[in-house]
Image 1 (cartoon, rainbow, N blue to C red):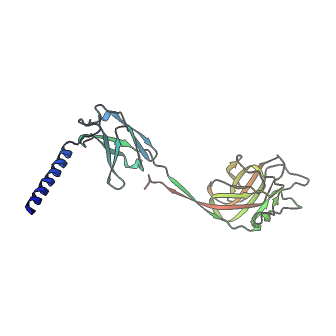
Image 2: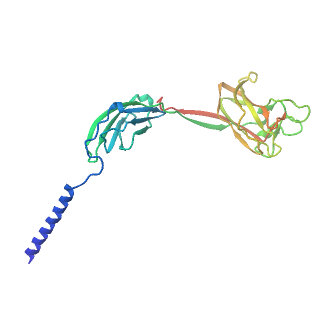
Image 3: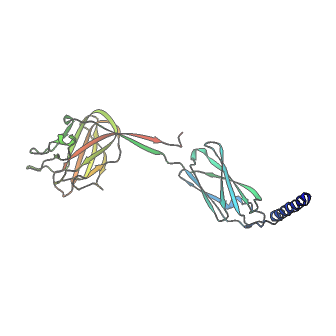
Length: 291
C-alpha cells in the first residue's frame, strides 16, 4: 500500500511541473515586441535652461516599448539612468552646470521583451545655474545723539522717539508755521562704516502722515551725499503699518545715512513715524558655477 501511495504522489508532482512548464513557455507579452528602433541623433534636440537641460526627441517608427537615457554626472562621476515610456518625447535633467561643458547622453530603446536597440550618443550643454543670494541682517544699535533732522516740529514728536521702542510715541516734522516744503530728512550719523543696508519703519498710530516716496542717501563725510535708492511704490499708508526695504548697496563704505521724504500721502508738507531701524546687511553669494 505504501508503494502505491508514493507512485501516486510522483505522478501528481510531475503533473504540476508539466502544467507550470506549459505556463512558462506560453507567456504572452503585451506591448511592442518587434526589434526596437535605434534613434537617429538628428531626431534629438535640447534646450539649455538655467541649471538644467531639456532633452527632446521625435517619436520614432518602428517603435519601442520604453527607453533608457543615461549619462555620467560630472559632479560625482556616477551613472544616472532614467527610464521613459514610449509616449514620452522630452526629459528635463536637473542640477546641471554650464561649467562642466557638454554632457554626453546615451539613448537606448527596448521592446516589451527587454530586447535592446542600438545606443545613440548625444551631447548637450546646460544653462548657467542661478547663484543663490543670502542676506544676513544685523540691527544697528542707535542712540538719540546719532539722530538729526532738518525740520523738527518744536511742540511735539522729538526725533529720539524713533528709537525708544514705544509704538505709541512718534517723530514729527514741522506742521506748525512756518512750514517747510519737502524734501525733509532723518539723518543717522553712524559709529562705524557700512556698505550694504536695510531699513525698517513703522507708521504712527493714528493721525499718521506716512511717506509716499523717499530717497536713501549715504555719505562718508556728512557733506557729499550719494543717492543709492529711490522708493515710490507699494509704501504703506495705514496706521501702525510697517515697511521693510530691499537691500541697498553703496559704491563705497559710508558713515552717514539720510532717509529723505520727497512725497507724503495727502501731499502735506510734513510726515511722522512711530519707529525707525537701520540694519547692516551681509550679502552671501553662493555661485555653483564658480566653485
